[in-house]
Length: 329
Length: 195
Image (cartoon, chains in turn cyan, green):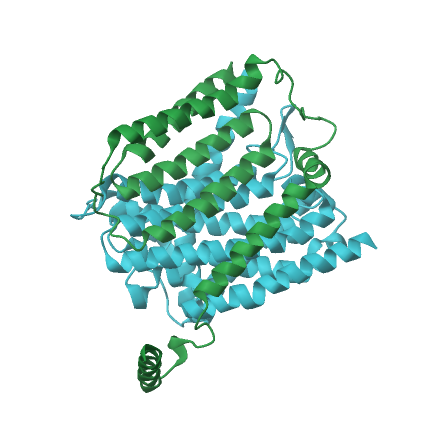
């Protein structure tokens, strides 16, 4: 353990935290603009050019708002729940290679915080813990709607973890490694060697599961505005509510990175063009999250469970079995 | 040095968390601290270089098992403290003490007997963690592994049988009068059984 390694790691952690916190804020602006465009509105226009400073205004509002802790809530749990959502979202980023390695002043930088050889498993595990944010927040709130939302979030997360895990199995069997860098290098041969061509079913299944794991619109039951007010966020105010938001948006960015790296070749061979490609892919997946929100209504809880257990999970299992047979013979 | 610091830090955290789990009369505190304790245990796997087991510890215990506890807690008012009934505290102390001594003996015996100075499966640097576990699991421990799988299958079938009595009808998709009709018919059935 030399000093350079520790300094490098700390710098990487700080950079990722700052960049993705800012991106999460900017994501809310993008979401408003895209939704407004699709619904023939203008969106935020008044603060700054094209309403760009709306993000800053919202940030100041959230930070300076009174932090209300209602009566009868379980105070420590109520306070820690939003932190869990935001923290787990950023913890997952530790195993994501955001960039190919590059050399600055003769010093090689690996733009991944912890290059553990089980990267994708770690990301799935940390995202599974993300469930505790809505769950504990809803249960500690002493509010019926929050409790219903907590129950729904537990059901949705646990069910769709099965789908995302099983759908990832097939590509992982082909690559033979759980490290995202290995998965990326497996597809370094260009567009033709992307895993999406050999595993289209796994790609679609994981993509659908990503919507459930981030709680985005077709599966937005965990905080369904028109049914259960704001779900687990009902009793929250100020920055604690903002932390739930940052967690959700950071998760959207990170899961976009994961999809792009596993199925669409990631940064490819590591040239500047590959990096640009990765950013474009991530941007597309993020845009798709917003597009779906504008285009699709929410599904009912029973439809959600039906889709998971009767359609997606059997498909994922069949996909794994077929992949196994193809690899054996 | 970093390993020692990390070990003692996580050891203390784990013990504190599980102490809260046992001592607290507030169900939510117990749930949260137990989930946290499970995550802190995974740190020991990471320190030992067993990344795969560490991640599995997080996914299985924190992601799945604890979430099921949380499901169970939905049926109670989790914001209220629980009044425990302690009928025989002396018996609890004796039984708890015996259990603690037994667990200690299990862990200490191999160390005292010098049989555990070397791991049964020391980390092989030539193959990855995941591959090493796979090889042991599907050769030497294949039978226990398959037995565990069968047990889980049995539990799953039993759960479906117990829970899925009226799974072919969906109350959400029915009209109000259909549901009312169903209530009537089920009451009629129970009356019939009563005779």
